[in-house]
Amino acid sequence: QVQLVESGGGLVQPGGSLRLSCAASGRFFSINAMGWYRQAPGKQRELVGGGGTNYADSVKGRFTISRDNAKNTVYLQMNSLKPEDTAVYYCNADLVLTPTSSSTRRYWGQGTQVTVSS
Image (tube, rainbow, N blue to C red; front, side, top):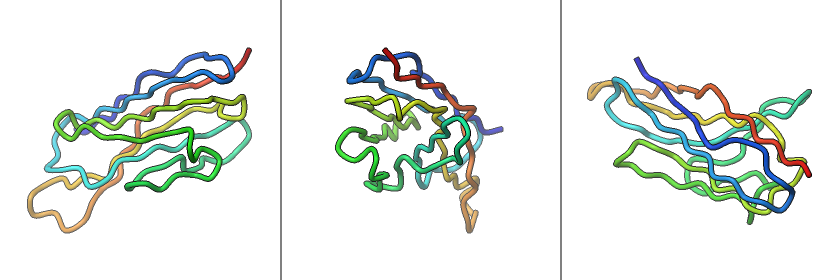
């Protein structure tokens, strides 16, 4: 069974920083890509960034995604946070489940709340 476990959310003041982590565990062969989405109250889930250097325009220059392949972990460093960044943040991973798999399967984390408020 595959799990994605996120951590690092919380309450931060405007202009502050947070770093989210997402670790993949369980039975899979390899990770093809990892990324982050977010969903604010009353809004649809939107892409934050992933698959290399693709970032939403709203977070470019403030957020950075990095990976530690040895730990099967993706990070989201968020700087200069704004109230409009308040949302539940979800990580995802496109996994190759077996050595003979011809495609990937996408898994999601449970979400972690980020609240930016004074």
